[in-house]
Amino acid sequence: MAGKKTGKNPTDRAKSGVKRSVLTDANGIPLAVAVSGANTHDMRMTQETVENIQAKRPKPTKKKKQNMCLDKGYDFDEVRDLLKEFGYTEHIPKRGEDAKRIKKSARKKARRWVVERTHSWMNRFRGLLIRWSKKPENYIALLHMVCALITWRSTGLLR
Image (cartoon, rainbow, N blue to C red; front, top):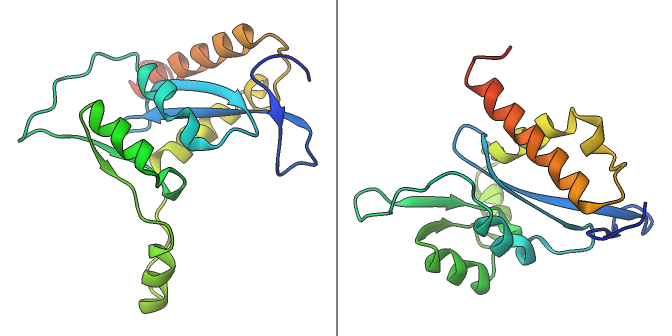
């Protein structure tokens, strides 16, 4: 697979691959997507993902804050500054803290993120799971169509 927005996958023998960054609401409905090469670090895609939000966003206030939950891969000052610039209250665990907490209490389970469920829903579409499109525009168009379909299905109108 050649083309723009691809890169060597660090976990799959350096084959060419793609990485998608998805921002969802609390119910897993996709609000923004960004695409890059598989060798791009997650934190490098943060700005593009936040800028691609399609829904109109209410202004954050002191009473109604806009929260952004990210995993440890985003634990960088650049990301925290960017989220502050966009008016989000960030919730990013520090790297290494979960391991310390698990050692103290073995009963705590790993936290599952809502966005993982959305990625699973997207992977049900074979054209996204295996990128057949060489042109990035076609892949992004398919990605947007799948996001629209997921949103429509979540409203209960299409089952």
